[in-house]
Image (cartoon, rainbow over all chains, first blue to last red; front, top):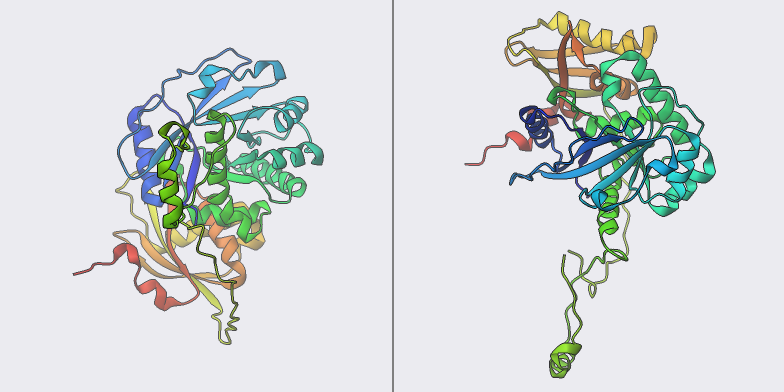
Length: 255
Length: 129
């Protein structure tokens, strides 16, 4: 079974608090977290692109960039995006949402949870995104903080589920403090509230997150990643291979 | 890792039908507060959970019957019992509860089971000699 991942931990400059959030996540059962650096291009505010150094502890820490944009020209896939493991976009207009679903080179599209959805979800860009392997993200921490946010979160989540039928959805925290995190099975239960089925709810924090991670890795490669399986080679074949000159032997990089 | 040359056998299915499923679900929970020295009584905890249910589900949800079977004040852990139909509501209300008297808190659900016996032990606290 795929492991539990939490792909949205807000970056704070307070390193001690960030470390305690990651420790709480490890304690609750998550095996991978992603630290989210938010960039708001409209206000030309750049967050420091320092990458959190990975510590040698049982939890794996990824880096993720979220671009808040309202215009397709704001989003430029360039070299600095390559430093991050995952790239997400937060569309604020319908035009950008359509462009993000169909053409942008992103892994995650964030669905608004702190405000009323400024546009309606249409089936055609969402189906296009599902075919490309892009995932929609719903964050649950605003629902814990405030009851108005709770209504917006549930309303937006339900309208998303109606259009996408529960496919390609991930649920993440947006935790800034360690007390805002919740355990993985609690989130799977919240998925039922959002309109996901039981299997989809559990997939939203395990298999779909793993798919996002792999999708992020493919962005760094030219064609894609190859998942290899071990196979026993019969003796005769191996002997024949040894006779071939060294330069002609296939080069396979194991990941 | 799966091997390419070993084929999986076709899955066989076995259907189990439970005749005497439990009517209730039991949950072992523990309350984690920001200020670790705050203590609650059992009645205050029940009031907190009812207010959480009421915030999320309204009057109908707040009136849903559930029981606090055991409560340990020093460690703030307890066992709740709820009817099967109300499990999702109660669990989601516990998840989304964030504040106790303007203090940050969170409910940690350690075990959920339809049978009380399973709550007696778990592999996280297993001690092997």
